[in-house]
Length: 130
Image 1 (spheres, rainbow, N blue to C red):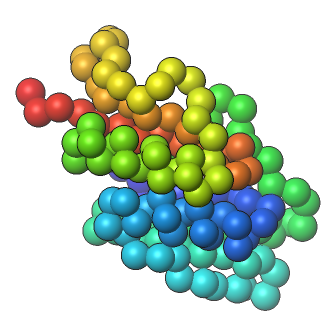
Image 2: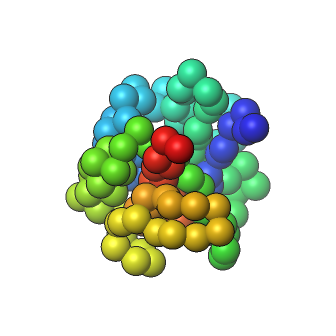
């Protein structure tokens, strides 16, 4: 459904270290640096799309979106826990309920929420096989 997701960050190198460690838990290689003449960026590629971090092109500070969440697909609850733990160990902060199973209108999901160093809310999500 999505081709790419790009997040604005204020400290590109602190965010690179965070996302290199975090995404490494799901076998994504370290970010590839790019500078378009205005903004510093790192891109992370997977077989299904691209995730990027960038300093804002307009030169204004990056801010997180209130009510926004970026979800990353996990293969298991254990992978979601490792993703979450690495995020916290790499400068992120846990948010919402602790990682665990949730029952809701879309069925049973394993969710682990955290915020990156700039306050962006991200989630590790595992959907069990039906």
